[in-house]
Image (cartoon, rainbow, N blue to C red; front, side):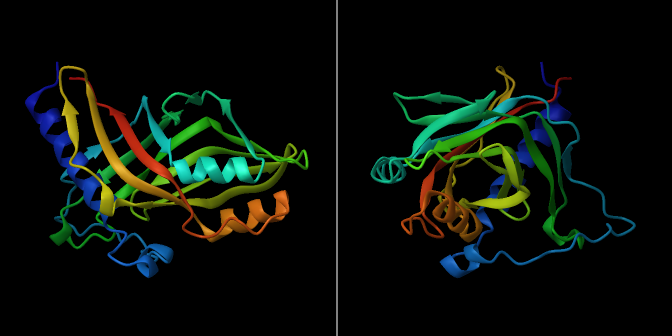
Length: 232
């Protein structure tokens, strides 16, 4: 059972993640170019309002958009999972296990910038796309950066590394729902963030699969992040 202190910390952390993912801005331009924010050392009296120092479980899932699935079909691209990822053909939901990371939240008036810091790792899983030209692209080892509202990952083409870490998907939190905490089940779920392609990802996929159909902000789906709550 969660202690009151840890439950409160998790609730604060979830609220922090909601704010961070929603902080992409209110315009497409702001989402396109999230401001670079260098982390500043906390002031002497500034301490985290909440922190999960060792994420260890559950998943980040994306319910794939119908338009994205139709686009894959029209481009004759076949999706598949890599490693520990799973794909439910009935719901169109693809899920990637969380393998580690940490998130720290400072109060916005603390003077620490950005006030939400950390990374959510998904090592050993990913998404594979196979084209009509027999080219195979794997997007793996995803890292969610809540401060930048960005998901990065490793890109391989025909099993050759194209990029060790590339910005793949924007995470637009303007559509996010309130955090749902299940204390009895030991989870916290943040659902509703819109996932879309970055220009880097769109350009790379267009080049490999010999098309011009994919573009920046092409909607991929809606994300659902499920965190394992720390035990007392």
